[in-house]
Length: 212
Image (cartoon, rainbow, N blue to C red; front, side, top):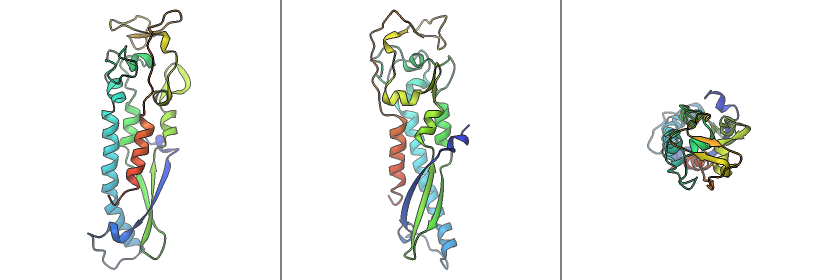
């Protein structure tokens, strides 16, 4: 699964000054190959630090925390005005772990390559990271073909007026505690919130500042 998540990986490119990144490293008889290898040794831990930061920020995000708590969670993210929870509203099956697929993607080692661009010691670093569209494709709403629950969190989810929640449970509910009904309204409203797209955007910005 996680390997396929890089099928539509997006590219982020940054041109770096080798002398700046290698200011604490001596390269014996530097040539293109040795300089490139030295740069990789300096860049790799910097990328790993940023990848861990991305993974950590996703794990502690209010949406992730609430979904990970399951069908009887409190609406700690505030997206439903405190009524019910996102797990049962979206309609995940009881016992499922919807955020795991994203965690696995973010825990994959971010790929990159280094290439010299001129004689002034400048090198281009190209990063290959999962695209937000690929994550959308891997996070379908269980009962709505072609729609991503991650994108829905970010841009809006519909039919909330028909959502009913009961911590004691409903026999016909896939999640166990939430159902969608035609003629009754809970009166709740959904508030969209920045989520995975923003995390990836911030991650890209951090990659573009390797010397920081």
